[in-house]
Image (tube, rainbow, N blue to C red):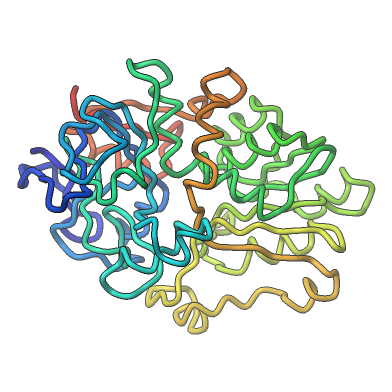
Length: 379
């Protein structure tokens, strides 16, 4: 099969690799119809998260079931399915408690949590390919209506829509609340969309890329360009000096100032300033335990020196961690089906798998308009 293969930082190839197959009775193999390029994929692409050469990339996947193991009972050949990026066993303590993002059995390294085509998340090939093997298929796969309706909406169910929603859950967004989202990439835009779905009265989105801020405004949010104004001051001015009730961090450890210099604490510091006393912050931007290429020595050890003292003084609660996709994906699917949610509004490009290397390059360089890229292996 054809697949997007990681060779080295900034070096990918679309090449022929071995087809996946059913390896255990609980496996399924799907024919991938859509796989997305995620902002998180840029961490290994840029060499900021170590990944072995030869790994097939891609953790945002959906498709049609082609084969199932003898132990698979619920999922059938021909089913249209979404594949959560969390790969979970469904029977360990964390899975039983709903924390499929921290499965204790799926990752052979012993780290909690496993996923497809990503550093430190196990040996599982990703789905930027024609086919994908899915372990524990009955537990992991989400069934979708047959056909091709909502393809570009459903493909967001594997990661970014649930992750954006998870940010709003951690930040305790509810009816009438004011919300500030830092980062207008796909996850930040999904956090803004989710905040509006949850009844927020005010939603502010902070970024500096004009095309992304324009999308935020089209969703009904207030765009704040931090290259032109102090974002915390702008939020305070718009909330009678109190600050937002809720904040979502959707940037992560590679935050940059307008000049392009990296400051891993920048977004957290601004959120602490912009969120009111006793407010809530949800952190879904990626942070790592070590980052050898970080901007300072503390960040190289995963130590992000943000103003925790001010957060403590203000009594701000901070929730964080990878999204347990299965906690949300069924309900978010139904919001799409019934016309309440339209995550596909952020899709900027749809390209065949053969064009993936060029798409990665343009997405990484933030070429104007490259917001969310979908790969279609069958075209």
